[in-house]
Image (cartoon, rainbow, N blue to C red; front, top):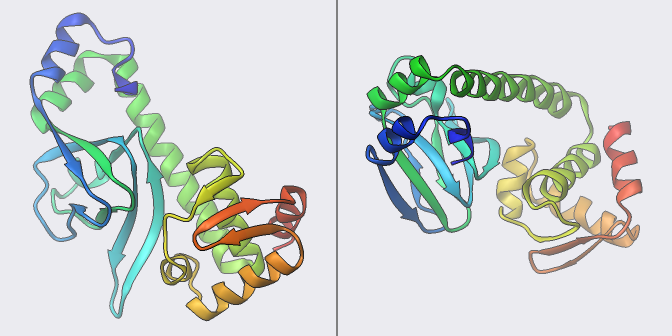
Length: 214
């Protein structure tokens, strides 16, 4: 695990002997909202969507890729999962004993600092995303999504969309028809190329300009 850097041998041994590795297929539920949380969950391989049930529908909050921890605010909060996590590609997850994890946080200052930094980064990203999604037009929001896929999740200008157009619409609070229309506009403008779910960003400079202008 990336976060095991700077751990003592005995701490690595403690962590290694107190976790279970589980493989999940695309579409499998990793965390279920409303269920009691008993483990710290580490996404070791793959990618997943974080989503929450609201008053009227399910809302996708974000996509995360390995390696990363899942559900830490719940684990150290009220112990009841406040959102769900579902794999969007085949993934591998470590379920770590909560008490062992807490002990490691107390014994290893570097490890504790790493976890705190990850939580802070996640919160700041949530603020930024909320402001962007509510203030940008559809083209700006979809440009943000494509750039996130390219620069953060896949680190490539050619990738396979991990979400359906309906899910992307849910993520940015738009209908599937709107997503389809804007994608078609991007294709016509020579910004992207698409074949099925395969996407290739042709003009990233223009895509970034659309993102910045909202």
